[in-house]
Length: 271
Image 1 (spheres, rainbow, N blue to C red):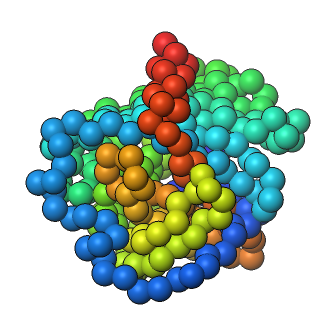
Image 2 (cartoon, rainbow, N blue to C red):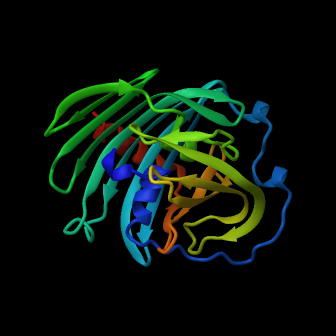
């Protein structure tokens, strides 16, 4: 999509606004196997997680991403909504519904279909569907068009369905494909702030990426498994653009009851 002309889609979009992520405290080396379990046999036949992420621009709340994911031994599904905060809507608005399905090869997602239905500040609607080797797109001012599917795994699957550092070479936003390469895999002990944020051991995945003009993007994902969550999740995602502050998504830790209500909200919004 035009608004996602960056190597890591929605998170990179936030980086355009000059997001500044908070630092980390109490960093220490830990064993990677303790941070994120790699034994796939420990996973149950179907794992369900409801995830709520807060996006920030410096100290300003920029929006919310609410997702439900279903993880099977050999496949996955993802469904969610994205919404700009009320504070930013007078200046910028982008909201949408997103869905993805795919296969799982060990801890790696391989998407087979991706759907995005979005509305921008000018109330213009865009729909993108990637299914196999075909990409179909609708824009309110241009109608429908069809093109070959972009290369790689979709950005939402890469970010939210990778149970370990992503080992692929490309990702896409539904329309365009971008190179992405794992630069470093390490572990840290992180403290993400308030009581509803994660504190503890995390697997850190540092990626190098680039946009269509070849401009560099630095992407860091911290993976962990907080108590009550079915599988490792990104507890924080940071996307940096040279010469600008970084964009940040942070997982909001919630109770099982609250996560259940999130799932109902996602289902209602997609109906």
